Length: 359
Image 1 (tube, rainbow, N blue to C red):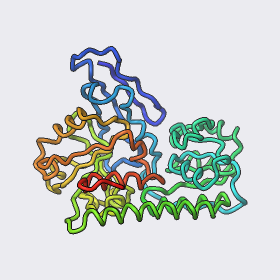
Image 2: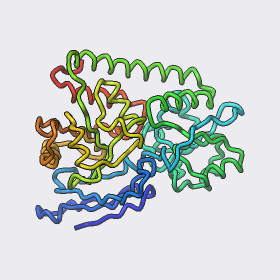
Image 3: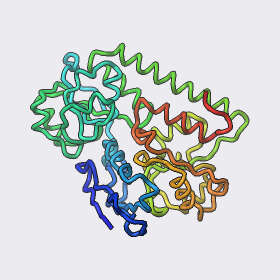
């Protein structure tokens, strides 16, 4: 059995399961020690989950990583402070971004050519993949940042060292506040102001609202006369057994998506944005539908069967009706608040009300 330890956001690519492994169950098991990104940590000192991948045939060997969660640069780090744009001193011309969600926004408003450096985890938009890398929130490469001579640093999360560095050098620093949809709207407006590209930001906002409204209207048409389904959405868990289930609560993008399409988030009343919940809590709250977000996994009929079998011991409506679903690598952005959030809403609509196909 091959074991790989991911020490934290520095690890970009854990080792793969050997392609030559036989059909022996032990040779098809990969254990990963995963440190939960801090914006998804609970307030308690929750033990770090040990994740175990089952048979290699269930998940493509080259696809199963937890790097997408590492891509979510922290928005919650102990306490959440409101992000405010720094004082204006002319439009930013050389931008270093350590925020994957801001990468997409900056490109959309017309600032692609102004981005001179990106985080270790930037993978979208494609035109940014060749930009110099400057590390992540926890391990910014300050020398690399200095060499790029930025006049604006965009970061999601709080790093006192980075903030002090920017202050000492007189570099504007903007903390991307994006956690929910309202935060995303704020970020778009702020970045438009900071770059002098407010018209581009307005156009992006108009497009985002139009797509969200289209999804909402489609959901209203499909669910006419139906009781809002109660949904459990999982963001991470131990894939070999039902434990360490991380979900989204009030104030998160995922909670907003469910409300936008007329569903009820069964943990939407909790204040902690990303709580770890127990099976007992899931059973008590009785979800009608379970949706698992696994953006590093290619969903196959075999995998779907395995997931359903894992949930089968639970006495809840979703399991009884077989309404357990996985959103996989065809939605690689499903864990990150982004301009592509309407795509997630559309897929969830198809899950909630499958009787009508999307036009």
